[in-house]
Image (cartoon, rainbow, N blue to C red; front, side, top):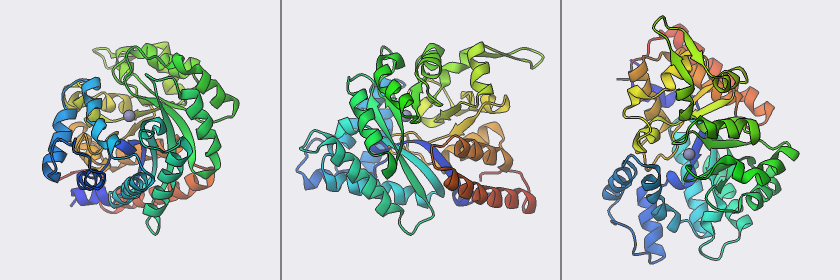
Length: 362
Ligand SMILES: [Zn+2]
């Protein structure tokens, strides 16, 4: 009764999804052909989908990021960015996502003759077009590449588009050696303007990256946060021992944007069953579940929920909690949050009251 289709139909909230990590393989090929790009590893869409997954799945973040050279190479014109964004909205709506925050780094799309503002405008227009007439709302997070030095400039652009769909700021890319405090100029500008921040931290780095992101940079959400697992231990009598940092994150309800399949592909966990998402959730952290890169991870939000649900024995109430956590820590307007919350309550309470709470994904 509780088939994959039911999870797909359930209203879902997605906070961590990269635009350049979610293209349709067929679109990459068509865009490459239009521009005479001869660099793709294959021009067959099924082979390309498999190539992306196997390239990503090499247990190393730097190797994982290699797969992006091909998506980014075809996202260098207004028309391409518009199309990719519109298809992103369509694909998420089909997966039952009713609210998403999509992130991308404008500085990666300047290899042609686009200007930063044109990149952002094209993506916003594409997301709007793809969402039209569908039950989905999408906002944008501007990311800066942490190994580069343009974060303050990108933050200024994010603020310029604040009333037009850009709701937050992030840093992304290789983590080790590029600590959050390197970008204090950007983060201070965000804080001065009361602009929300989420920071990739503890994806492969330790909890010191998370500590910096929260305490020195002002992030209200953490991308991944796996490094926190070293700050938590459970004694033989099931008592939880947490560090001061983990305790503060739990008390302040700092959302952890967890992305299980992606974390497994970069080697941060060996299997979904070993992912700390189950433990963090059990101990009351504000856990959210996300896709990160749907193309490279060969996944969807439905798929992530299904895999974790099986591994950790989740029921519909658990999934409702994950979605409530995501909604309450989203950077959307209070009015939209209220509206979306009613949709969640209506669906999940109905589900668990009328059809039982047990969750059986197959
Ligand atoms: Zn990410």
